Image (cartoon, rainbow, N blue to C red; front, top):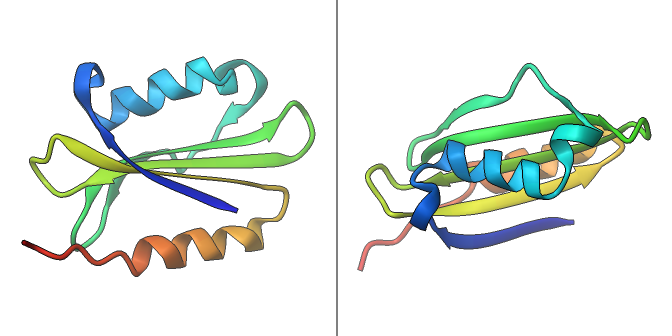
Length: 104
């Protein structure tokens, strides 16, 4: 499944630092290989970073984490998904592509 939550950047200060902290805390930095597609994330409403962790614990699992929010915001949406099949990540891409922020 896909997990989504809103997170205040707080002490992390940036989406990149938040993903680095989470990756270390969950052990991805030791158990997985950082994918080449990791880096900046940008779409028409959100900016942030993505981490793609591959071959976790030699199982073939892949974990994708995206932390992105409106430009200049103090919060981000943290989106995560784990799968063994690359085709599953099409659902994650679709979820991110269809995010619409409503102003109040």
